[in-house]
Length: 184
Image 1 (cartoon, rainbow, N blue to C red):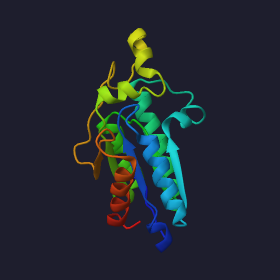
Image 2: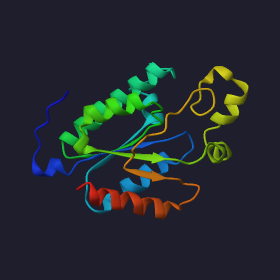
Image 3: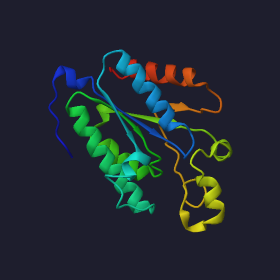
Image 4: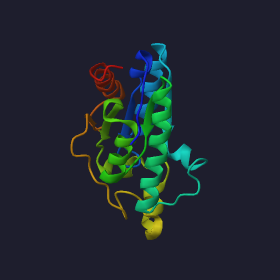
C-alpha cells in the first residue's frame, strides 16, 4: 500500500479507468475527454493499453496473469502521474475484478473512478477496428477477451457508458459530470 501526500493541486488529479471489451470505445472516450480537459488547461495523460503493449508491456502476453500485470503497471504509472498533478485517463480492457481492484488500491480510492464501457460484444464485433474478432475466429489460442477469455463486469463502477446507445458527445458529458463529482 502506498502512502501519498499531495498538495491541493495534486488532489485534483484523478485516474479515470475505462474498462470494457476491445472495440467498446474506451480509447475514443479517453481521447475525447483528454481534449476537453486540455481545453480547460488541465494536465492530462492518456494511458492506452494497445500503445503500452508496444513498449512498456511488450514482454507480456494475454494470459490472466499477464493482463493483471499490465493493469498493475498502468496503475503504478497513473499513481505517479496523479502524484504530480496530472490526470490519468486509462483505456485498458483489464478483464478481471482482481486486476482492477489491485489497480484501485495502488492508485488510491479517492483518486480512482471506474468507468465501465459496456458496449455489447456483438457491437464490438461489428466495429472490429483492429480486426481482432475476425482473427479470433481463426485462432482459438488468441485469448481475445469476450471470445476465448472471459470479461468480469465491474460490480460497482462509478459510471456505465454503452457507446452503442450514447453518442460520443453524450458519453463525454457523462464523463464531465463524473469529473465534477470527483472533485477534478
